[in-house]
Amino acid sequence: MQHGGDVIEELTADHREMDDLFDRIEALPPGSPERRRLLDQLTIEMVRHSVAEEQHLYPAVREHIPRGDALADKEAADHGRVEQLLKDLEGMDADEPEFVHLFAKLRTEVRAHVQDEEDNLFAQLRAACGPELLDLLGQEARLSKESAPTRPHPGPRSSPLASKILSPGLGLVDRARDLITGRGK
Image 1 (cartoon, helix red, strand yellow):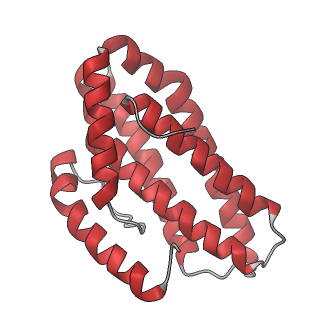
Image 2 (cartoon, helix red, strand yellow; image 1 turned 180 degrees about the vertical axis):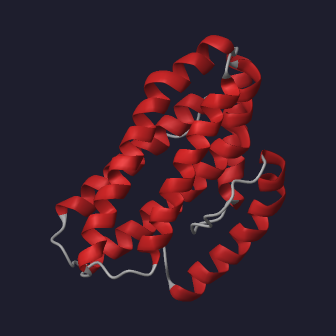
């Protein structure tokens, strides 16, 4: 799926890319070093995607959807669990026994989150917002992903404003670390 368009199209394209990376990782034999490289790429994409959602999608959900606070809180909590799993996997070699278990848990969490967003949240947002707002949110999401962190930083979820202020700095540090280590190539 190609990137661009409104926020729902942009985030759905991210979801398909993540599905593809999950499939590619699972297709490799356990312990393959390529699994580690692909998991690093998946982590980069997932963290950037989460930042875009937390900065732009969830504030729109809170503002435009009835009971949007509860929906956004649930989705942000999902992100917290996923980010902790990514952090747990971050320093792990693909041949470690726990890698397979944590990876399976990560995929289960992400699948449930994606299905809920695509079947529930996106439909409600499309019904509540006009195309101009959805297009603007798509542009903002793409821009935020450019400077977003590339590594998991689990912890208490910050406000969208705090995230907009802190994420570019974290992103800069993460990209510098990636450049030095060759991660994400």
